[in-house]
Length: 483
Ligand SMILES: CCC[C@H]1O[C@@H](n2cnc3c(N)ncnc32)[C@H](O)[C@@H]1O
Image 1 (tube, rainbow, N blue to C red):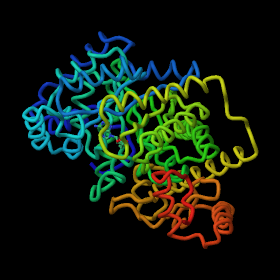
Image 2: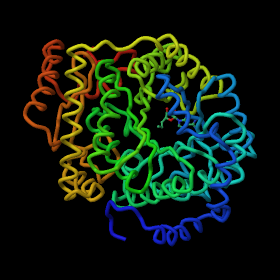
Image 3: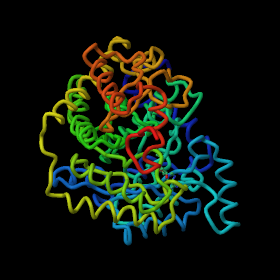
């Protein structure tokens, strides 16, 4: 089926399901009618969409960790601990890397090794290998909603099993789980495979079960300018809405300058709602999630808590509906449960202290809002134009033309010519805008902000600034000043 942004007819969708469910024996457990009945019996307490709605209307920011281990009973115990001791408002199953690459036989071997070793030998929860009944044991073990978090270009079977397994939110998208995560997956394939996921979520909704779809905003998580990550999020929202999804959460990776990050979070839902409306999608509920800093972390745990607290403060002042929490083990790898719980509790302390405070409107904030709106609109409009109105086709052509260019992405389908660097206040700017479709005013804005830093540091804006900024937070700073 050649790629186009059009809702899959039910018969086309069901004919493709057979091949997907046959990819691993646990696919046989999926029975959609039974799964709908199961979700309905589970009630609102398990619904991520309902929890996000409460957060949005009450002005709260939900705190959610990442968490995934190889053994089923350990995953259950971990989530129970993070809910009770960590006070998590909602929970994840972070999926392992073999499953993310559809390498289920190796995930199976990892489960056996973990059983033999008595500890997790995988970097996440291998949900496909466990299957539907086991997933239900995970979601039934806690009384808050549980979301599937991963990084899978082809997540069709993972979605079938986890959604039938009672998870009520599913992260990812055909761009955001391909370009930052894979070297050699064509966008034509990943976008089509995520149309399948969204069509499945749309089918659940048509049968009374709301599945929340969250797009992976941070992308490579390294100095990604807000205009680029917003454009990807808006496009993934449009692609999902076409397949019948009506509940979306758009994400953004904290960059570190408060005014820029607050501007990013204030513009994100409005931009998504504008484009959904403009493209004819009614009644789509939009919420937002901020990811605490996704780049390199200090190894020192006290300093790591400083970064975590800053991410929590930013989420609160930005009015994010949800914040994805980091841990003091970020610099070393998969966190232990105590460190994971500590990150959540530190975050919630800050969220609670800032609950009744708001970012004052200032000329700087107004300017950042205007810049982000102009950048996102320029990219999304050009993408729609390249696709003659078809955002799926337009996305493939936009990446080929470098109209969308994600910094530091491994994918060979990403142009990779763009270079970001921080300005003198730490906001992320464009050192090399490459082929981004920005007008002279925008390009001059970026150039001048970087020139200002260059004057202060007495050096020409250049690649060394990029390197210095990549390591800065890990070394205890934000702007990578010259030594
Ligand atoms: C977006 C992916 C990167 C982030 O995802 C965390 N991450 C990855 N795998 C697990 C896991 N199995 N449990 C808890 N956190 C995990 C990393 O530390 C990093 O922050």
